[in-house]
Structure formats: structure tokens, C-alpha cells
Image (cartoon, rainbow, N blue to C red; front, side, top):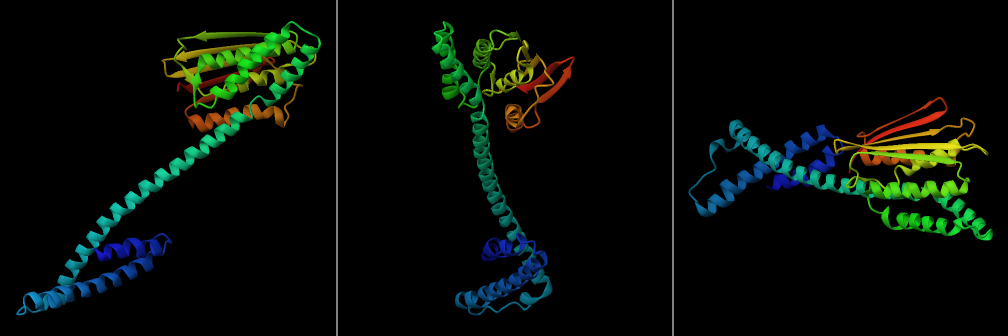
Length: 295
């Protein structure tokens, strides 16, 4: 057992972990020899002489065959116990790494979610101020919708998942406020196929794509159409298709790209490779296809 401790706590970390395999073998053999001599002397001289004085050290105690058998037994004991110890250490380390990765993932996801919509709220507050100055009848309606959106942002999206119905309501509020801002130059349509009452999704995932419609679809006097569809497939997957008119002259600066970049990054973090996302432009129409597992 002493040889096992020497191997686990001294030889292994000093040589194997540093990839000094030849040195490990050399010192392990030396340790085997030392412990064999100590074992032999303890058994046949110190112990036997006191318990059974007439006994003598067997002549084959230091013979090759006897040494080989003892060495093989020693190697087996060391290998067995070391394997158990190293496996236990590996499991503990693996769990520690997984916890660190989960913590890092939560931190990154929270950071990505915190970057969603700040410019929208600033713009809405500016427009709300203008409505208040002009004493518009739309001001109370904007305030209520903005209140719903802020409540959702502050209290609901901290959860890893929300219902699809909550997400759809949030998207509807967002589009309604944008319609007020742009004097109803926005035409939107949403189609839902399948039972979505119990469907749960990552919060604010689809909104990033809807926001992008306004960044790339509006010029000064343009109208914009947005067509969205949600479809539940076999109660396992959710398919999202978004179509909107595309203005190639709108461009895309770094700030405008934050939403889509965040969405793609979140998809990779949440689903790894278990999702499908494609986009294309056909006849000045931007088409986005997204298929994700239902949480």
C-alpha cells in the first residue's frame, strides 16, 4: 500500500503529468526494488524472528522467480488502486469543468440578452416624449405597451426559457410601437401552425430577427412588410420563417449587426449543432428559416 501512495502522490504527478515517461518507469522500478527489500526484511527477519525465532529467511526470497512474482503482484496492486484514484479524480475534475462551463455559459447568455433592444427603448422614449408634447391620444397606448415590454424584459427573460405565447406577445407589442413611430407604414402578418400553448423557447430569440427587418427594410418613405410563421413539428421542433422586404441600400453597420450576431451566438450556445438556420434574398425579399428543438 505504501508503494501505491508513492506512485499516486509522488511519481505520477512528478513524471507522468509532465510527460516524463522514461523517468517514471526508471523511478518506479527503483521504488519496487526498495519496497521489495523492505518487505522481505520486515516479513522474514523482524516479524518472523520475534514470533517464530526458529524460522529462517527462505533461500528463494531473493531468487528471480520470487522477485518477479512479487513485482507483478505489486504492479497489479498499484495499477488497480491508481486507476480507481485517477478515475475518481477525473470525474471530480470533469464535474468542476462542467460547472465552470455552465457558469460561463450563463454569464455569456445574460450578456447577450442585455445587449438586446436598448436602442429601441431610447427611440420609443423619444417618440413618447414627442407624443406627450403634442398631447396625442396614442401616448397612453404606447405607455401601456412599453410597460408590458419592460416588465417582460426585467422579470421574465432572466429565466432560461419562456412560453412561445409570451414571446409572440412581446413581438406584437414591439411591432405595434414601431407602427406608431413610422405612421403605420408597416404591414405585418403572423401565422401559427400547431399547438403552441406548452411550447417553450429561449427568451428574446426571435425578436432579434424582427428588429433586423426594420434596419434593412425602411428608407425614408418606404413601406415595410413582415410575414412571420411559427410551426410545431412532431411536438419536438419549432420552425420559424420570416420574410420581409429588403432594402440593399440600407447597409449594415456594426451596431445593426449586433442583434443577428447575438442571435447566432445564442443559438450555438444553447443548441450546439442541433439547430438549422438559413437565410437568402429573393426579389428584394429577405427570407430567414430557423428550426430549433422545443425546450
